[in-house]
Each structure stands twice: as structure tokens, then as C-alpha cells.
Length: 443
Image (cartoon, rainbow, N blue to C red):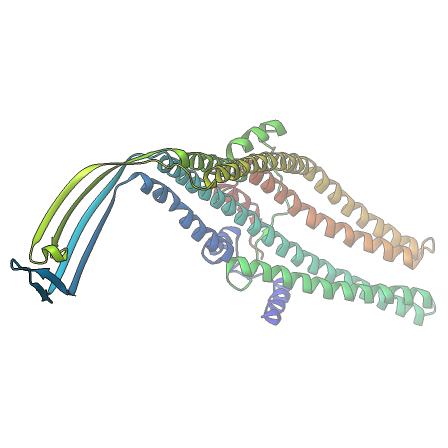
């Protein structure tokens, strides 16, 4: 598999293909094939059942029982004359009962109902968060693969440039116009570039394998981020506005709120351990030969009434359960506050990264242009004897270093905006479509 991925990576760098894997296609494939997302779907479906389970505590229960048995009895009795009479009758007994119980007053059942609703809402919030996380994870893996592809192309170009420089140094040495030192310096740089090229191949293979694990298919040629992409102004601009949005829409905060509600209802359930319960009970039963005294009789009994259960003492279990539930409610409240503060920190971090990202990309683009100018000037200075070969090698290294940083910064800027929206709870497929527009199919 790894050899196949490496071969595919080399083909990606060598030439583009018509069937590029765009972001939207990758997202559709991830929704079908990503194991983490499929697990989240199953978790959501299981969590949804908490609502009907909780509601069942307030609904009637209906039960039926049927029995049929063969009996043989040993009877000893006294007749009218005072003589002892023994008999061994054999008979069959049968019974069928249908019973119904409807809670009329049940504080624990009401708490279970509310808790089931909160648990179902918790599972929905968790699933929403994992769906958004899948989107960010996909774009991150896609960007890492594209950056690794760019880095491999740059490493190959750097290696070729240094190899050409080495050939030129060797020609000058043979002509008596160069030095052995120049050849050794350039040769060392070539070997270093060779090692960097090998590392870049491995990084691309790893990045493509990571992406393949999410989309569930072999890596394909990827769409490239357009060179002229300009990020739209951040709306809203103020970080406090983003915090307000996050408090209303962040999935993690929503899940923690529901977890606190679940814990609160657990407290109510525990307190109900001392409360009475009133049920409506109804039944109808038919029996034949129910007892030895009536083995030759059958009866049908119908009943309806109220049943009041009053718990008096359970060995201290109710009080201990209540104290445990109160502690867990405090824990859930602290975890909600912790999540809120963590989201606030993440919002401020990503908000700052988005605002500074465009300036950083622009600065690195200027750094690339300046490094290219410096390289050309250094090359002319070397010919004029003002600079030496090592100065040219350093200038060339600066060009490729700036290009690598620029390639990474362009994707980092994009990911920072997505991380900001994830923290705010607004990251969805609509945002993905807006991002996908910024990519172009390689030619």
C-alpha cells in the first residue's frame, strides 16, 4: 500500500490529472467512508433512544402471563363416620393474567423523562461537533497533502538547481577558473538537497495516506489552492462578537450544557427516592384448578384500583445516591465553565491568526521576490569576483526556504479561518463550498 501511495505521489508531482479529487468530492466520500464519522453516527442513533426510554417511565406498562401445569395430590380426610380417607387426585391447573399499571404520581419517572430528553439533546450536540470536526479534519488533511506536494516540487527544483550549480563549478574547475572549495561546497548542498527530497517524498506519502484513511479511497490528484486567492474581510470583525456567537452555537458548549441538565435531573431522581408513588393498577385473570381446594373449579377475576408505595428506609442508599448526584452536578457545571473558557481562548487565538494571516502571506510573498532578486544579484557578484560561491548557495537556499514558508502560510491562513468558525459553531457544508471555490484543478 505504501509503495502504491509513494508511486502515486511521484505521479502527482510529475503531472496533473483530469480527475482531480476536489474538496467537495472528498467531503462526500468522507461522509460515507470515514470510520470516525460512522462511529459518531452510531453514537448519535444510540443517544436518540434516551428520549423514548425516559418517556417510557410515565407511560403504562402492560404484562401478560400464562401458566399450565400437571398436578398430583395426596389428600387425607375424614368421612362422616370418623374414618380416615386417602385419595390421590390428578388434575391440570391453568391460569392467564393480563395486568396494566399506569403511573399517576411518580417524581422519579418525571425526572427520568426530562433526563432522557437532555441525554438525546446531548447526543445531538456531540454529533454536530464531530461533524464539524470531520470537516476541519478533512480540509486539514487535504491541505497537508497539498502542502507536502508543493514541498516535494520545491525540493526537486532545489535539488536540480544545485545539481546544475555543481556541474557549472566542475566545468569552471576544469577550465582553471574555479576552485576545489566551490565544488565541495556545492556538492555538500546537493547531498543535503537529496536528503530533503527523500524526506519530502515520505511526508507526501504519509499525508496522502492520512487523507486516504478519511475518504476511504486511494489518493488522487488534488485541486490546488489558487495563487491569487484573497481572503474576504472577517465578519464580524470584533472577537467579542465571535464569543457571543460561540456561546449560542458552539457544539462543545451546547453538549456541556445538556450534560449539566442530565446531572441536574439525576439529582431530582435521587431526591425522589424518598417520595411516594401512586399507580393505577388493573388486571383480568382466568384460572382453572388454581388450588387443591378448588381443583374442579374455574374462575375469572377482574380488578381495578390504586396502589400507593411509600419508601421508608433503604439502608442510607437514597441519601448516598443524592450526595453522589450533587457532586456530579457540580462536576458538570465546572466542566461547562472549563469548556466555555477553552473556547474563548481558541476564539481569540484563531481570530488573531486570521487577522495576521493575510499580512504574513503578503510578507512571505515579498520575501520570495526579494530572495530571488538577491540570488540573481549574488550570481552576478560571484562572476565579478565580489562574492563567493557559498554566498550564492545561501541565497538560493533562502529562496526555497521562503517558498516553503509561503506555501504553508497560505494554507494556514485558510485553516485558521475554519478553526475560528469551528470554535464559533458556524462551520458547515456551506462554508466548505466557499472554501472549495478557492481551489483549482491542476493542469
